[in-house]
Length: 387
Image (cartoon, rainbow, N blue to C red):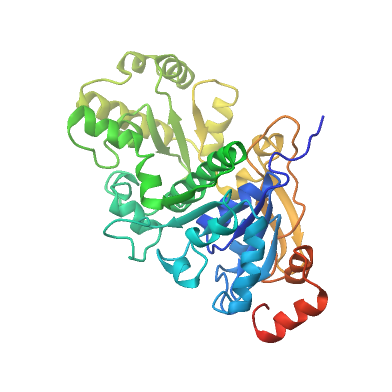
């Protein structure tokens, strides 16, 4: 039985731009929250159109000039009834604008106020600018990305932005919302992307605790230091991923490859043995194209999979069965492919109810819902408070 969405009735005012904040609020919107994306009347959210369309669905758009006193009064009116405010300005900016947490909690004690920044609201780097690569670099995560001999630091899945910023913020917001409903008191969340990505550097920390140091990419357990957990090139310059960490999976893989002589060499403590096994598997996988290995291991439960390109994954049976690929038409941005909400739960079925809003697309609608008359909205527009 389909129930109301889990966040139905929750209103979120989203002042963020680019990636971390908009992805966080999109997760909330996908789960049923009423998310209002608020952009300034100038440059606004300067993410490119392709990104805007992917991370702002199921939201409505409003444009406010928060340097304008009339616009601030509009924001106060909205915040007094909202459940969550999310912002990602430089630390101190919202206080200077008159929309900081201490100001808003006077209007709404149950408000959850989430500030997302690179280095946090406190600390020696609080005012420094940065991007994902900088945050990962600063806390020892970029050093762990890549294969042996690679230049560290770059991943096209932005770990600090998405894991450290978006998901950590969503986790904190949901916890604070739960408590606000119980206690009537909101909270101020200080989410630093450096904190979030560092907190998930589990394997490097495990290596440090065990050996007193981390290992370079390509040398640790899960970066290629073991031949049973590695990526191998195929004859057509594609790749196969091997994740046979457990002995039973390794044995089945070796049997499937016709190399039962390698079974007893699983996870050897001798680096020379590991190097020899890796060299033999490298030669073996290089002897046939990826499609050969894909067919050979189909249905074999030993953690061997092809390394697919994204465009191949979009047509895979796996993502189709999970309902993860959503094809939509945006009236301004055109045809597009999106990833569905990854949270599956009973009584809830994800859907795209609204396309990503154009800047200020729902300004009149949101303000009229808040109690403004059409003439008042027109007056606000003439004053430059809204656009």
